[in-house]
Length: 253
Image (cartoon, rainbow, N blue to C red; front, top):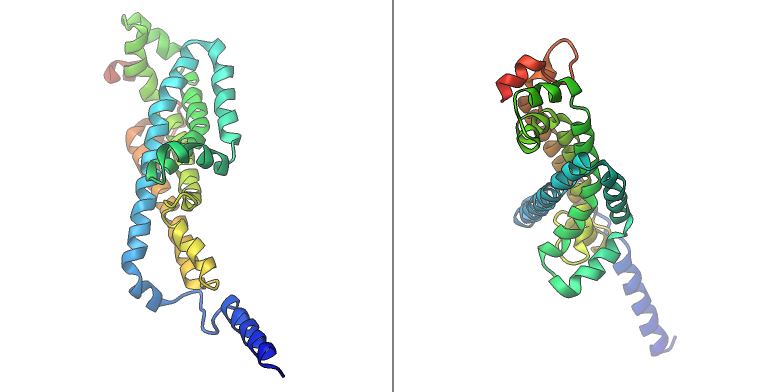
């Protein structure tokens, strides 16, 4: 065999060795967790930060839009349709559009995630407002409340269950979608997953990122569920009820 053929064979074998996973490649590796704890915690912290910023930004935008659709019913269709169109835009396209203007920063990931959360938040907030009993509105008007005061002191508090439902859906969805932010360089736990695939399919790294992502989504969902139960004590009564009666409206006021 010529020296050129031998060199080619060695190069081919080296390439196969690099593409194949290591023989000792378990899904669970405590040594990996111990050796990379700082990097894992940093990825988790970034994931939480991006998710929180995106959901808060979406909430600040969505609630006024839902109120606008609630007050002016002809705007309901256009507002929901616009949010639905934004929800269908591929994440890669949004990243490609905003990156030249914002650069490779966390905000580049936060804005697309906030856009995707708008539809769930607007729709559920609007549903919560619409479901406020008419007799409660009549009682508020009878007490001399104007539209804005009635909204802030009566309707929004009674719409909290619907708002929190949208918030929970948006939060869980955003936790999952934050992993895509690895493309512009800020994907939180998504970095562990993608680097695990690049690192000869390193199972422990992939599983760590995946499990932490699922655990974070569950933890935030349970946290919001608990906050919702604290904020809506009337929903914990034995008899099902959608809202307090008129005497309770006076107490809210």
